[in-house]
Image 1 (cartoon, helix red, strand yellow):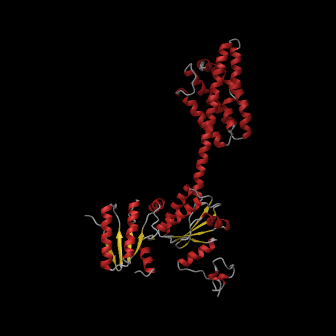
Image 2 (cartoon, rainbow over the protein chains, first blue to last red):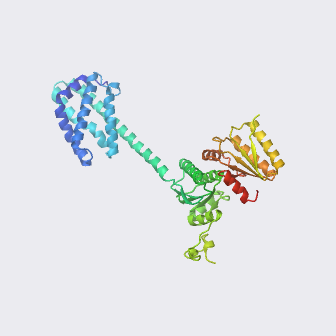
Length: 305
Length: 119
């Protein structure tokens, strides 16, 4: 059934604007103020704007079709309002109620002015009902889209934040990996690492995987790719932070780590890196260096003779 | 016919690749390099690819082959100056150039060869 009655509805709005606004405001204010996020003045402003845009669109033609260009301004307004509500933390239902709560006052006005004309009343009721359904659904759709955009943006930021490359010493880089390693992150990790190798002229990169929860064949493959890429740039890699369970998993999976140095702790890896670059650590008085060290974790070389 | 220049520094040969390599150029380079290694008694070869923005599987294979040829003639090859994007591409292509030594720049490449007692 087609939606007609555009001009009639526009008239209805024009002659009853004040009353409609008051009733609508009473309903909406209860919801919005519970959130405490939208001020009274701003709410009134939004309503007035919405109603005037609605009137203009309704008056433009007898046939009421939300998808025509005449309704462009209404769509734009609803998009903006819905996106704003999404950012402010309203639920999609509360946002849609902005539109739906205008139905009740409108139906009351219709019944008052057309009480005896059942046919026209039915037609206009149908038009308003369908129109407002479409308007409400439109706000929900925009709401969803803007929420998804927020998520995507946050994912992007997370990706960039969690792959830092730090310089431990002259020519020694450390790459602490936190979280799972998928192909996208591996790409970012590789680029960051190689860029840092070029900038600092590092010869050794320590990749610490203490923060990687699980290592399966895919993660192992990504790690080996990173090691190979660093090697092509003239830097050796040491993988550290391998937990006991991870070591078991690696062997069970048959991953070949024979040409990569692996250490259990970052400290052990650091000592190896220092040795490879021809350095060592000595205490201020020549004896204290190895005092507080447990034996058997690769730091034995520092124990006093 | 264009040739890639080969410079001698003591017992080292330095090859700087600055142009796009095509088949004939690559073969010419391999010819020239092997002749020079024998003629100069070179013990080390430095292949500088810092000017190459793009390396495809052909160049990757060519570098690997050249290094193998040099090793047969008892000369150690070090590839220097690989750009990060090139390194990532080669790894993605599965060309890890496992038999080839690498260094960040010519200076480090020479240090590497010196450390191993090659030159």
